Image (cartoon, rainbow, N blue to C red; front, side):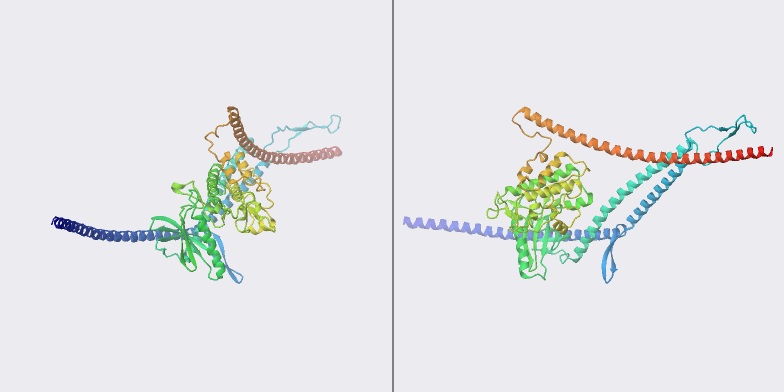
Length: 601
């Protein structure tokens, strides 16, 4: 009986527990239902927020597009435009400058004409320069024994009626000099204005092409790719790809969508090769995480003839465009850019397996703007090489299997060697590229093959002949920078520094701090002394250059004054010659008169 009672009590307890659990379950079901309603409401609100975000982004993008086109229409008249003209049986587009250039040219022509007029007036004034010698009346006397002797007569040569007094002459001369200085200043200001207009024209042409490409793109209607990326505006277009500014609706950030479009006329093997190459770039790039390298976030297929890679968005121009606008960069700013590039290269050589970028050039170096001003990021790993154990040997390097690809001005000589076997390369390819980029930043020109096409570089073996780099005298660059460039541009790759040695060069270190503890204070002080001597020598070199410039200006000024003096002396001699000839004629007339008088007597 006791067992039955115990079982009954246990059963009652279980029933009670089951009832409690059922009540708990019912409560949880009610909570779950309520939470689902809340989630549904939140999802609905989130969807509305996303729709509103998309609409706001689209509206903002459309306003920006409209404003950009209005600016272009205004600048067409002011800066110029492309005009289609008939050329034989075909039509070609020619650039015609706008009214801003026409007006500026007229001003420059007026200044040139006025300078010529002043030069003419200065020459005429030099002919009227007053004589510095005090001329006295000359006496002509006859001998006392002559029967026709008469009292002494004086003959005064008449001075030129066009000559000026000293005060008037120097007053006129000073006026002309001041007018000439004012015209030189105006001419310099007009030249600066012309350079500014040319920079604006470059931006205008770039924007005209961008707008044209955007209007022709099939992705110009704010499509959403991969249910995530809202396309906003076209940033640029390449051979088979175009880059759009987009917004990641999931991560709530701006990104750059690079859309690769395959040519429909390509054969299937060529399409497969292009896709394979792009996916290889993705496999390399997606693993890279460094503040000086553009991040690669995603890759996906759009349709059978196009796919997209999603990159970190950088709001700024590339270094190539900046150099075209400003020609060159001060050494301090250029050094900062090189420091960041070398830092990224050091990272690429520290990871396993290491990577050769192989296509370092100003166009693949993006410059930050706004809060990121002064920072750079390296992009485009389409030609990069993986230095894995199967293909790379530390002693010999790796085979260059893509000879002919790349940008020739920035590739070292070993990439152009032709033989039975492919040339061997290493990360020193990127070191050479750094030297070329730094040189171009400082001097505004490439060290080898400047103004040559890639075809000309190949035909003339320009890079294979680039045995030594030469530095122009202007602008003035420190000796440390020249040593750094020479270290990068050593002709033989065996003599060229590697990436790690490059990153440890003193030129790239913080100059405000010490260079580290040396073995003794003597050597430390000696190093400091040598550095001070180098700095002092650089300063003296700059002063000497300034003195040479001033001496050249002084020499030109003395030459100009010498010409003026020579012209003045020539004019004085001419006037004196005329006066002497006049006196001779008067003397002859006087002698003839005396002769006639004696004969009549």
